[in-house]
Length: 369
Image (cartoon, rainbow, N blue to C red; front, side, top):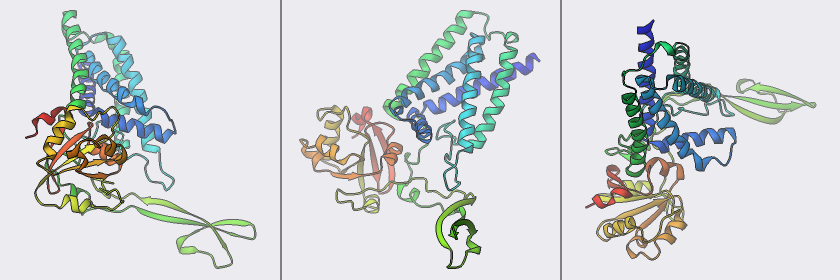
C-alpha cells in the first residue's frame, strides 16, 4: 500500500507541476480561455481580473505539486488539491456537455494544458475524474505519506523556491513572450498557408427540421418530407448529426484591412522581400515618448513597417507626431486574431513573404538590427 501511495503521490504531483508549467508558459492563453467561460455563463465584469486569476492558478498548481512530492504541509495541500480538482472536473464536464443552438460543441478545448497540448473537453473530463479518485486516496491516507526529506527546512526551502519560480517564470513569459511557442504564428510558420482549410478537412454534417403551421396547429417535418403549399412555413432548425474533423484553418479571422475596409491580406503576405509587422493590441497606457516607439521608428526609417491593430483610430492618434510611424501602413484586424498573434503588447514580427522569421516583445526591441 505504501508503494502504491508513493506512486500516486509522484504521479499527481508531477502532473500538476506539468500542467502548471505548460499554462505558465502562456498565462494570457489561460486568461482568454477563462473569458470564454465567463461569456458562456453570461457573467460580465471579470475580464479585467482573468489574467491575475490565471497567474495565481498556474502558480498554485506548480507549488502544490512540489509540496505534494516533498511532503510539506500534506493536510493543507491535499485538501486544497481536492477542492481544485472538484472545480476542474465541473469546468471540464461543463465544457464537454455545453453546446451551441445548432448542436455543435461550445468549446473545442478546455485549456487544461494550454495550446501546447490541446485536449478535448471529454478527454480533460475523464483525466480529472481519474485525478479526483487519486487525490481522494491521498487525502484519506495522507498520514502514511512521509516527507521526502527528513529536514523540514529542506522541504520549506524547496517549496519556497517553487513559489519564486512559479511567479518569476510567468513574469518572464508575459514580458518576453512564451519560452515555447505553440501558437500558429510561431517562428517558421507560413501564415498564408495556415489561413487555408486543411487538405484533409471533413466538414460537419447537419440535418434540418422545419416547422410548418396549418389550421392553427404546428408540425415538424424533415427535409425529405416537406408538406405541400397549404402549410405555412414557421421556422427552421439546424441540427448537428456528425462532427467533422480538422475542419478549421489554424489561423482564423486574420484579415488585414485598410482604412477604407479593403482586404489586402494576400497582398501583404505575398509581397517579396523582408518587412516587419507591428501588432498593437491596445494603446492603453502607451505614451508617444515610450522607448519602444523610438526603437521601431528608427527601424521604420530604413525598413517597411506595417502596423496592425484592432484600434486604428487610437493607433493613428498615438503615432500622429511621429513622422516615421505616421507614414507607415496602418491596417485593422480582428482583435481575437491579434490576441493570438501578440502575447505581449506590442509585438514585432520580422517577415519574409508569409513566413515568420523572428518575433519580439517590446522588451526585446533593442535586439533588432
